[in-house]
Image 1 (cartoon, helix red, strand yellow):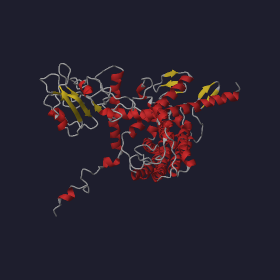
Image 2: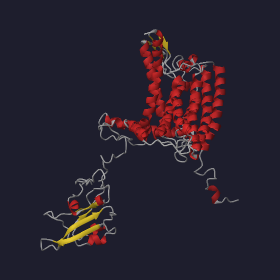
Image 3: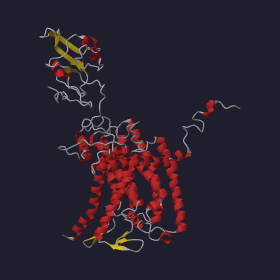
Image 4: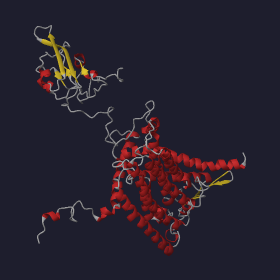
Length: 370
Length: 200
């Protein structure tokens, strides 16, 4: 095999892995949503879909959903803008998928004499890329709302745009604190920075400098704004099941399913982003590239592939925990009214993020870098 | 100046119970308390599910769901369910076709055709005894009106839907074949199921 072909093949590993993980998580989330909400509410949840009597805990329900969606009538309203109407769900799903590309899920993988960064796209401005993709996702909603030729859909699209602006500003401003602490826009650098010890002059090597510890306020603000950007309850004003059906009111069949899918993909993206920025990314506590280096001086050397595998597993575990938490929030909190969501975004999240930048700057000047 | 009672017990009053406290208005603490509550439910139920499925502890129930029709909650013995006609020892109906039930029925869903009974001690016997369950309101008046205790509503059967109205008419033979429910209220005779597809 020639060198270029091998390079391409090896580069395809992280891309394929990200696509596989994100798409499967997105599909499984319909099952997680049903089952987790059921268990939280002392119910059992959907468990009846079966193939030859095999139910496997209701895991076949996403499959049944897909069959149902694909075989339903795909209706286009008479006055709809046909191109926009058909394009909107694809735009929505595409940016949901693309946003995960620069989130690192492991350290550098050395294999066959080559070094592969375990992220689909190695970007120096990875954070900006993710923010851009999350923001662009709202275009699908606005297109859907505009093209449907339905006033409720238009209201939903307009609300989606308003909510996205107010959430996006808080996301960007709260991430600035993280960028200041770790001094890079490259998400791989930020993940590496979170493996450094926190304030070694006080704590030695005991506490890793995860973003959760260095930026607690930013964590809360980012998580709130992130939940808002997934457009799910408690910030489901664009959808507003109980008032306006929202931007996808005119959609049916798999196009409707793609909007639901986009919401789940954004949940995965926010979980991945939170993990990468605040929960140490792929870092396992005390795991260095050579193996475990425990704070009291003991070491346990591990082969390179084992270390990388541990990192990937750690990243996926953290993402799963974050998804669990986002689902917990979605099934616990009542929804905000439109004006309440706006007030929270502009009068609480945004000023507090600016305050967080200020505090971070002062602390960095007095204490010094982590 | 005397304060009128209205100013102290309205939402305008800062001490009124509908006013949110500062902690509630701050929102974060309340959110965390709510999340803690649902998380406790989640983990408690997961633990009980695990006990039940993995360790086979039958008493551990992670959900309050009764998985009808696999599981049924016990019915009350007073439940008025599908009618049945009580049989004599020789298998013939105890009914003497006195028309009391047909007369008292507020929905006019009972249709009786009387005929002579072969036994001269018994005056009459129904030749036809049809109940249109599509009309029946399950008031139980027929059971109360019957002087012979010949009709009862104790089969425990509640599932008798059908694809057309004709299938909802239960004849004498069908009603005679039904048995009373068991001590737990569960039906003992087979539920009379209509054909799965509408006859074309």
